[in-house]
Length: 127
Image (cartoon, rainbow, N blue to C red; front, side, top):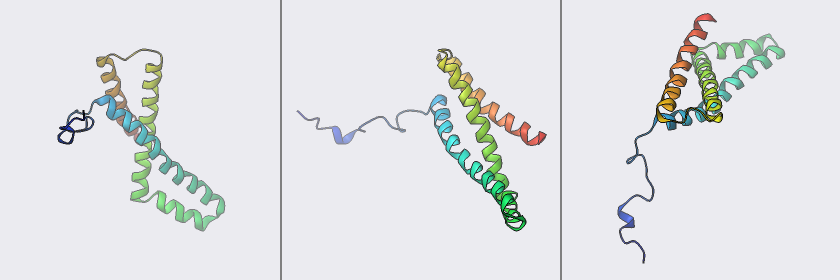
């Protein structure tokens, strides 16, 4: 017979029940940063194409990419690049069959998050 209490409980576990884990957050961020890298890539390609079209068009593209919003997008893209690269290294470690225990997975997650921030800041300082 049908469950009469079905309407009083969630159909599946949701955010009200489970606390997000670091590994799930980093997995979601890997997907977001992979897609966000497209914005920086599009701006960079536009900048190169503008350089080939002429000085006036290049000045427009250069003005956009060096504006505050352009700098913010490029900084975010740089962080996304480092984050995505380090998350890829983490997945390579996992592909070798290592790092699946909870302690190591948590350390790898924090290494990706902290490492991407540190490498982004170092890159901005050096460049």
